[in-house]
Length: 291
Picture 1 (cartoon, rainbow, N blue to C red):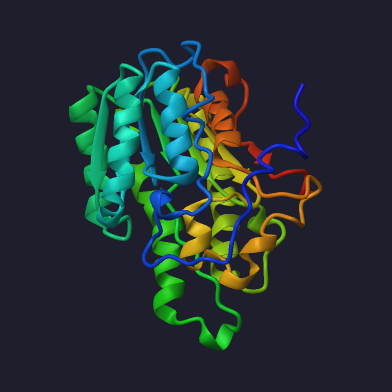
Picture 2 (cartoon, rainbow, N blue to C red):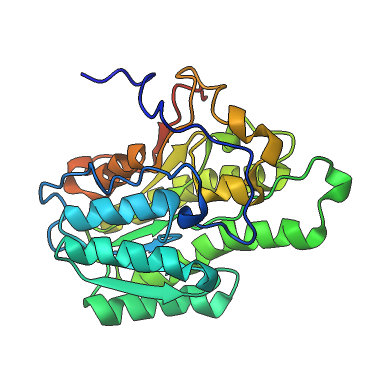
């Protein structure tokens, strides 16, 4: 028995900031990726997965869990995140699985197709696609939200989802699973995350429609919607630096979640255990109400 309100009491986010996309290795209070706790049971034995944003945070925790459940894993990430990706590769290989590293930028349309091709070639196929890579930058006033940031947020969070799924479909056999990452922001948008919240609502709608289209082909599409989760994204402009010490306190549990608490949701949706779960959004948000 574990009291969820008492978990991670030793993690006390401080008002720190990182340049660029942010690194797990750059966090003073390290996020829990499940590297010391996740125990697999063969639920994804023989599966072949591609995870965007797989170097850190939720994507990294999912990659570790997938590998320990028996899947080979390809990771997409920005080149600046190479050190984090190298660490996750080591953990995947420690689990006895194959790891493929695919550095690049999801705003590059050619890259979105190329990572699918490289995954299929390296792993011998593809049957789990996790579209998790994302961009989040807080802006206090709409007047200060540039057209460039607005377009880049949509290109990273929405366009890349469409392009990667489109490239993957010819390779996905019946029984495959597509999982996208939405957010509590799709339901309770913050005033300083207008562009980001809009992309997350779009992801929900896109996946619900796509799920109906692909269900007759035996391909399941679902979404995970995290609440406030402690990842490098938050320290790299995702939240105002001065607000980080209170990050997550608005949840009924009174704390931010950790990536390790998200990974089981992705495992469930990727595995055959969720064979009758299609077009759903699984909320992992510490109790924050959603419609």
